[in-house]
Length: 433
Image (tube, rainbow, N blue to C red; front, side):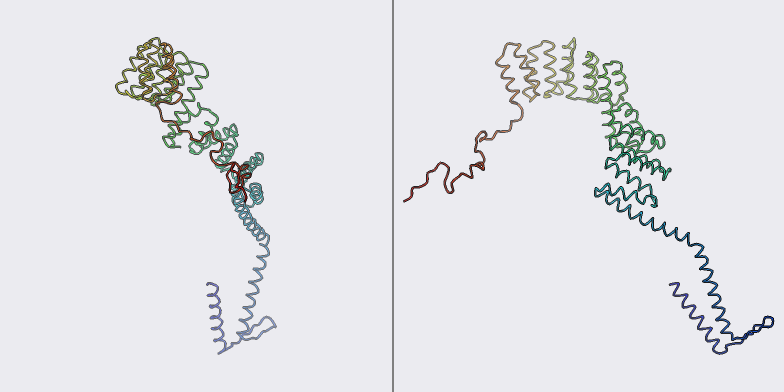
């Protein structure tokens, strides 16, 4: 539009000058020393215009000639950037299609000409990782660092992700510790650290990380609570397996007060105390926990305690019978405690009541053993048979009526081939007349 406007202005100016000169072409006399030049005004204006054009284009030519090397460099740069962009686009597409080797070559070929070489090298590192080429992957990560040192967090995060994906846990730990020092408040760094500690089974460091995870709201609260429960259960298990009572006590002291009544954690700890012969301590913890919150697993653990005063434990558990009269686990526990207290009749009654309420298989075993000791072997055998057959529980799946028959579904292929057409097997053909 501007070019068209300029053309029209020149045309109008030329037309105006032409109209003026057509009326009077004018006269110009130039004198210089002994020389004089005479011409019309129109010719002088034409010569001046030609001289101006020659000077203008001459200067433009000189300037363009002087800038030619820079123009060539700019052209090559633009062409390289275009090729790099095309190569990156094609490389990412090939990565999506699973052509990792070809994608890696395309991404690296024009990476030095790309406007975003960091992205080229990071994508090439992922392509090398997918081929199992760890050395090339590390080279691309290093080149990404050198290309843009200010992007240390982004490059290190990619490196940690690739190391975790390849189960290089020790290397990933070193990378994430570096990231933690550089970006201590980065949520994704904390999430990767959590994932790494879980894979390593480093529950102690994970316990130390939990407050930061909760403070930064890295994950939702239910997930963090499940992680916290799992962490403390693992720490209690490690302490128990170390056969160190002091270490087990320290692990229990590290459990937050709000989690000490959790059925899984308390059940584990009580079981470990029982294994170490601290049944009295375990009984106190279980009894206090059951008063606050009823849990059948804790009830069953309570019934397995080996106490010198089983009658006292029986009396404590019988207090819950009024609130939970149909709890099969409670009845089994009462039966076991009665057995420990040598109250055979009461034990038999509780165990029979447990079986009557579809109790667990352990109830059949306990009652069968009791009946054997009471010299009632026939009844014991009947109880064992009921436990094995599932009597009192859900009905078993009925068996097919034709089970065991050789031709329950259809004849075998070999039988079909030898079968005479239009006749059943074993029938005699009709006599011909």
